[in-house]
Length: 102
Image 1 (cartoon, rainbow, N blue to C red):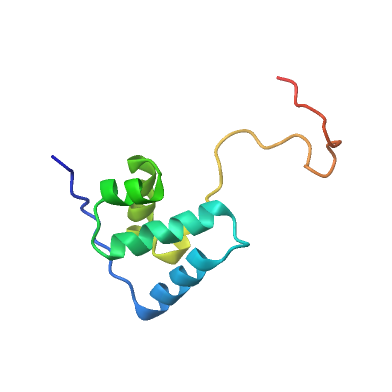
Image 2: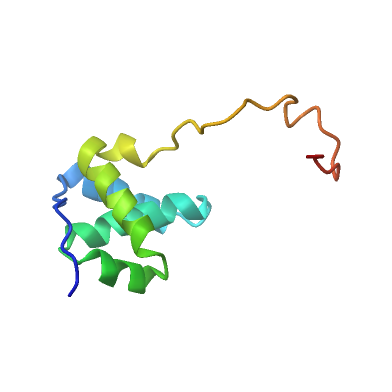
């Protein structure tokens, strides 16, 4: 039996236009396009399982972005700071092709 998400998505006209623009953008990172498509399909009333199948993504990923959009709207789709120790060297100081030692 499919689970039904408690997070119902309804979009304002501005949100709809912004998400459609993100979904169409060919130069945007894949993750940005995928998040926009997830929310657009969720706004059509599709379940997480159906969205995951259409976008070839995991159900957990779809559930995560549906929930984040429902709670924080468009800013919820942006990157969050990651946990863990900060990098010791900036990407500019690393030499190209240099592997990280563990």
